[in-house]
Length: 118
Picture 1 (tube, helix red, strand yellow):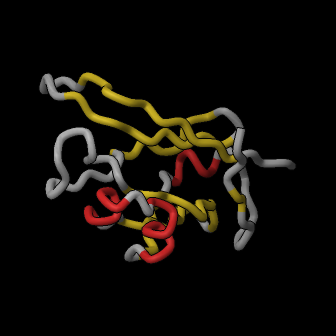
Picture 2 (cartoon, one colour):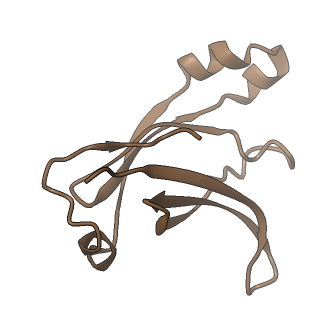
């Protein structure tokens, strides 16, 4: 069976508490498997708070893996955005996916599904 992992960014979603939040929604074969708050850093000014670069995303063994690169505020001032991304601090993170949702797909162990760009 062929699997397709996709991502959608949902900006300024009004939550029950009245605050607006940004979400990353992950879909496997058009079925939502994970809803994740977009990384937020309080040290940034308003409007510059969503400055986390997420790359190398894949699904393996019931978990979603991401590589996150944080930005340095000085890089935004100097306009060396892409150079700054290359030199940024890197974190490897993992988020478990619900077993009930993963059983819907019957994915073999150690099978790696890379995210597809639309």
